[in-house]
Amino acid sequence: SEILRRAFELMTARGEQIAELMVRENGKALADARGEVAYAAEFFRWYAEEAVRIAGDVRTAPSGNNRIVVLRQPIGISLLITPWNFPAAMATRKIGPALAAGCTVILKPASETPLTALALAEVLAEAGVPAGVVNVLPSRRSGAVAQAVLADPRVRKLSFTGSTEVGRTLLKVAADQVVSCSMELGGNAPLVVLEDADLDVAVDGAMVAKMRNGGEACTAANRMYVHRSIATQFTERLARRMAAVTTGPGLSGAALGPLVNAEAVEKVHELVQDAAGRGARVLVGGRPGDGPGYFYPATVLADVPAGARILDEEIFGPVAPVVVFDDDEEAVRLANDTEYGLVAYVFTRDLARGLRVAEALDCGMVGLNRGVVSDPAAPFGGTKQSGLGREGGHEGLLEYTESKYVAVDW
Ligand code: NAP
Image (cartoon, rainbow, N blue to C red; front, side, top):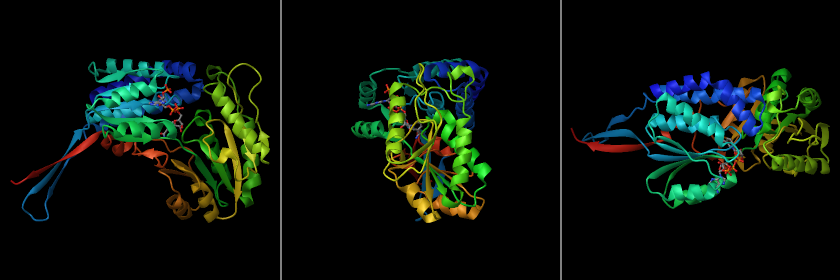
């Protein structure tokens, strides 16, 4: 607990340096990087407080003859594999609970962002983590490294954050040694604006849900479903806000940095062109920048027709496709029409109606009148092909424990 608390303090004190490093590695805007450092450090603080609250259980068997004692023990050596989009937070969200539970870890960062992971390892070492407890293993040969680590029977846990495709592969590899898996995979978040929504709140929420981290987030609003009666108003307001987003190098103070690499720009543009080719109207943006760098401007697409690839595939960029619906049932059906189930956003002034829609949405998290759900104290994770297990909150800690039942007769 005390080591994690020191790690929180050291990371916070070094926040500016780590944020700049992240911008240089991954391109994100400095404001996003600062936000990530604060969010990432919070996992150390939260799990510093959870580390001393791992409770067991004592029950009496129904027969009355014996006691059932349940211990929570550390699961064992854990392999942590993280993506490039949140290079600090995805690592601390795993390291924090693993250490709190008493596990040693091997962190394999994304090859785009190894330096942030190494900076975190320095923070942890200075905070007092003993040598050998947190190991960072950068490699461009991710598949081979993961296979070798998972083949060792001492490794009992795999916690992976990344694409659904790689998640599926890793689940198969982990099956050989029957390793416990937590999987935080891709998302395709719907954002539903009901006709009674407060439009100021809905547009603010849509901007955050779409533009946090430049749209390169598993939680990014990918599909905006808006009730027909307010669709024009909502779309015009959103387009005005998106048109005002400044694009430039991450450290320049621009609100939107470059995407992570050339392939990312190509993929985003391909999805926009496919939608436009099927009849979607490009209201703002829609073309990569002319100069050097992997820039793609904030883009709004209206009247996106069913069948457009952009409604099925993760965009991972600053593009907001808007689709119109006529009633709550249709909105829920459209929102659930995806293999993913990470997060959804709902905007309405009627709390009961919002909760009814939230219950009907097939996903692990719902933002109700909010464009952000991430919180170290909350269970983060998805249903369907968005993953298995939860990170954050007390649930996130339990993923690194194994329960042991002792039958006692005293
Ligand atoms: P990715 O390609 O799946 O890579 C994620 C990590 O897996 C990287 O460290 C990568 O290493 C490694 N990797 C790739 N192939 C592997 C293999 N065969 N065996 C073992 N490890 C392998 O994902 P990404 O492009 O970095 O990240 C974007 C994805 O992450 C999106 O789909 C996004 O939705 C998802 N994501 C989900 C969450 C969540 O909480 N649900 C949060 C953030 C991101 P290399 O870099 O060396 O390839």
